[in-house]
Image 1 (tube, helix red, strand yellow):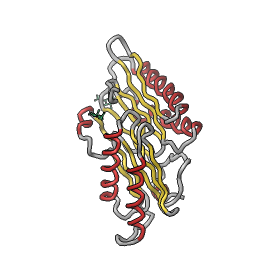
Image 2 (cartoon, helix red, strand yellow):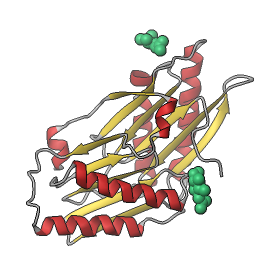
Image 3 (tube, protein in one colour):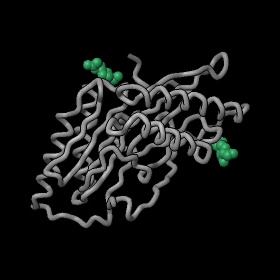
Image 4 (cartoon, protein in one colour):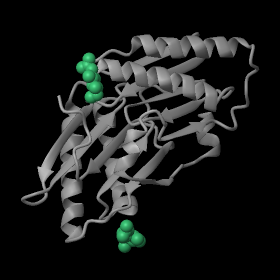
Length: 244
Ligand SMILES: *[C@@H]1O[C@H](CO)[C@@H](O)[C@H](O)[C@H]1NC(C)=O
Ligand SMILES: *[C@@H]1O[C@H](CO)[C@@H](O)[C@H](O)[C@H]1NC(C)=O
């Protein structure tokens, strides 16, 4: 199957996330380079194919969908997805940056994924379109804890994200964001998003799976994300999306 999958069955890492980190917009959150795929030589046709693929992903990405996919000579397959609230300027910038970084960080790999706050980009040397990527994922957790009634808080997080998973998976662009009241003064904000090569049904499966991982990473934490190659969920106690 996938080269990435062969070596890393499930990548689960916990990164410490603080609100300040958001300012470093140009740093990827994480990347995975396939290690067992072998490499291709710098001058090979493969490099040209990769360049063509990345170019196609960049030019193909248009809002409001914020999604593009490309297949070059049935040799390389790629997708790029921007976060649902990100405008076309930011989206393009992110995908251009992601293309440059993925080339730098995984120069001769036949498969790679790179994730940013605003977008992510993935390519592999076989057709993965329409398949839920359950293997490549990571978690980000806010170190700060909720001070009172974590049980109720966890329920609210699950409730909000489950609603968004439902709503998002039924929307055309497989994205939903929303908020709910925690108490008089505090709101809880969330998002759920899938790559648009998935069916509505598979999107829901992917999101439900991501939500089911929150108890193990993010119980009682003020913010958390489960980020994968096909979908991601996120919640915070502060507004983290661009207001439109
Ligand atoms: C796109 O979003 C960014 C960040 O919110 C904002 O600074 C910029 O003005 C927006 N650009 C357009 C064309 O709306
Ligand atoms: C939050 O709670 C966890 C689990 O009880 C604990 O290990 C961690 O140190 C706490 N974090 C902070 C910042 O207090």
